[in-house]
Length: 285
Image 1 (tube, rainbow, N blue to C red):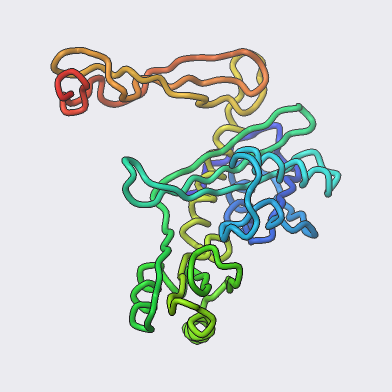
Image 2: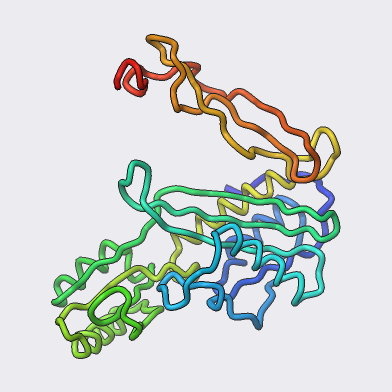
């Protein structure tokens, strides 16, 4: 769902996006409809040099630092005033169950000297397994949402440098599997999701959600200084137990903060005012 348009200081401006994986398809419509800005792709820079999901190039620094670096490269290479950087990550889900995808979209605003971050997260689709037969290959591909979602194939283990990416047809997958099995010393072939945005529509959707969060933040001025980007900076735990009243780890409030001045405001979260005793460290130690 695209955000409703709200007038902001960014209307009719150009946002320069550093990407070689088609992220403008997710971000440009949302930024246009929500802010009235035009998104332009900055090309000619290999973003894979900043890190790859297939681990042939390790990412240096945090996810946020990578998004920030991309945004500033976009400004440097385009000569524009507003740079966009997008960076994703995949890891264990809540309580270590399943896979969790976190997407960041950062705007570097060189006019105001601020950075505003949009965030989205939720269940991710990241399959990584080993196949020895075409039957196993087919089962893994089905779990990975192939061929709509691309796959990566390599012989032996997940860190073998002989990697084939961007596989999106059954003929290409069978051919890559046969080649990798011939090269494999163990007879095992490593199969994993291609997590690059243009190969992974589920991830592309999450990038769009992060873009919508960025739009909402840019459309929210600070009540003290008027800078855009006022929004949630952190959460405050301590929602009380409904049985004993003791504070729990459940969030009770959000801290909204400005990206420029010292304005901070704690706001109670809507919804339940207590937590079930099953989540209380005293009632259910």
